[in-house]
Length: 240
Image 1 (tube, helix red, strand yellow):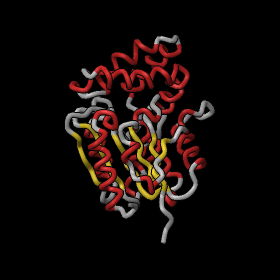
Image 2 (cartoon, helix red, strand yellow):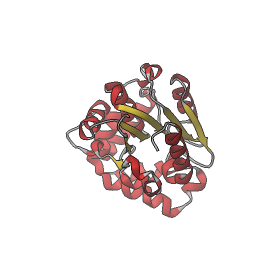
Image 3 (tube, one colour):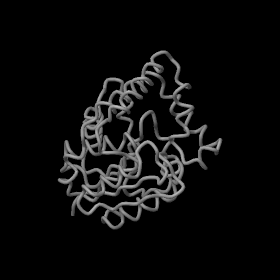
């Protein structure tokens, strides 16, 4: 009987365990769910580095649930060590490389971060990160602002540069043999539903879901719905 995989949760850019707070208590204890902090290591500067650190820190088979940048890291980990990855849950993410327009926006943001002008970038980003209904929820928005601003300028610069130079994950998606769940918010403006649809189309036999009333931060906006999808998918995959 193969060993039980561990469920690792990979946060998005500038995020930490707080973006999973509404989900962690409900995830199956048998899978030893844990939020990885590999992307917070100041010595790491690329998606490839983050993925290698995740694999080095967590031996044995893994189920990786990655949100946004975390999904990019999860796909890269599956490229580096396909034999280690029992399953991938890709939440509000994209397999595409950076576009010239987005690179220009990130480079402009990096300049402001380096000047310590974090709020000038982060506060307007709320309208892009959340469904309009959720962007009007002060408690939800404050939770988001807290962990992004707590990350600090250096992390924001380093992680944005990593995302700018991310690999084109579409090249290896058709070769995945593990179960894959793809989920996005219907109102996601940062990685629109077409990005998730593309991943699901490239991965053999992927499960795909779109959540209404959710934007990019679906683990915060719809934690119960994401939990339900994850647990159902893990049960069908035979891990619980």
